[in-house]
Structures are given as C-alpha cells and as structure tokens.
Image 1 (tube, one colour):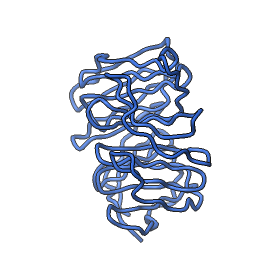
Image 2 (cartoon, rainbow, N blue to C red):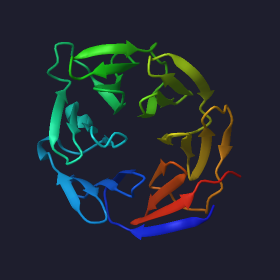
Image 3 (cartoon, rainbow, N blue to C red):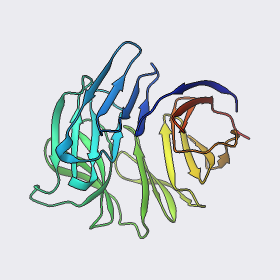
Length: 238
C-alpha cells in the first residue's frame, strides 16, 4: 500500500476526515475542532468531560457522545449546539455505551442494560427499532443512513436501517472498525482487514508495518494516526 500523504498533527483523537480534507478532532483540552484549509472552528463543553466518540458522517448533524455523563450533543456544520440528549433524565432511563448516526433525527444507541441496539429518534424521544439482545460484549459501533455495523467479542453484526439483521460474521480477534460508503475496515492488533460492500469475504489489507493509534476510512482512502503523524494511503488488498 503506497502512502499518499502525511501530516504532522498533535491531537488527542481524530474523529473524521471528509472528502474535502476537513479534519474533525479533539484537542488535548477536550475541545472538538473542525479544521479546513482556511479556518478552524471549535466547540467545548467542559461540564461533560471527555468526548468518547464523535460521528461526523452527517456534517449538518454531528453527534458528540460523552459516555461518563450518558449524554449526546448534536452540532450543526458551524459547531453550534442544536440538540442535547441527557439519557439520565429521560422518563425511560437509558444506560448508553455506544452512539452512532442514523437517518433524519435518529441515533443508533446501544442500551447497555437491555444489551440491545436501538434506533432512537431524539426529537420525539421514541425508539423506532430495536434488535434482538446480544450475548457478548460490544466493542465498536459505526453506521450511515442505510446500515449499522456492530462489532462484539463474538460476531460482527450488520443491520439495515429497519434494524433487520442482514449479515453476521464471526469475530476472529477484531477489536475496532472504521467505515465509509463501500468499505468496512477491521483492526486486529496492528493488522487491518477489509470487508467490501456486497462481499462476504474479509480480506487482509497490505500496509507498512506501522503501529496504529487510530484509523479511519473515507471512500478509497485509509488514514492511520500514530505518533503525532496522520498518514494517508490508497486502499489496496493483498
């Protein structure tokens, strides 16, 4: 796999990079940043502590999940707060461990107490869909408007936007995933694997022997962040 570009950047977490090279990240003081070629804009909510995850798939409705406070904040493209969901204060309390983007005003949330994935409409405070409870620990959750990918210790589950299970793969040691349009990338230690859309085969990705702190995928581009360097590669199978 050939390196396309590399950038020195000192950040706490890289959350997303879009097709226009807009970079979304958390700085060391837990501020959320959106950096374009010309400007950097920020959002901070220090009362909620550390940002656990940020979903930038829909740039008009970015969601930041603060797991320690069981809260999600929805931001617009200028990082202005447009909605806040405190799961502690809902009539039906939810102990949420993972959050990802759904369609319209929905979020995929993993209800830790019920051990099930739920499609939650934050405007109406209603559960639109829910899946059968899973029997093993959830490791990661990613989604777009059409599909939701949930990695557990035993299986990788793929659901459609109705919450129906459309595929299930054994987990052969994968610990996290990244997703963009046609490509799902899985990590096992310092090795990466690719599951292409409409394929059942998980194939190894050829890449330099690099340590991986974080990895992301945007279209055909794979990003690996480690040691204050963000490297950019063209996706290529072994």
